[in-house]
Length: 124
Picture 1 (cartoon, helix red, strand yellow):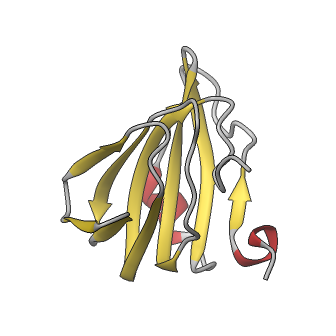
Picture 2: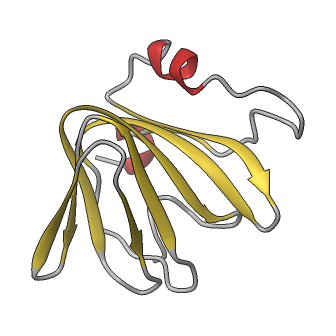
């Protein structure tokens, strides 16, 4: 299956500076099992909301680090050789070049910080 069909990813910036961002309202309105929306731009990075359940694809970003923060639920971050379990209010940085796969057994709300030009499905 093509990742574009499997995941509901929105790379458009939804909020301008000085706008209130109601993460809970956005999460409550989401019905797709793997939703990703760019919230805002902060300097050369973006803040993204993920409302996720299930598995993402194995991927890596050659030139960009990626930070994940669990707002609600729990997230498993598969790395080659180990898995890191993130509980609510825990974060984890995946350095550039490291293959990873996020997974969530139950519906989980996460925030991600990453370079504005990053492609969520990774580099070819």
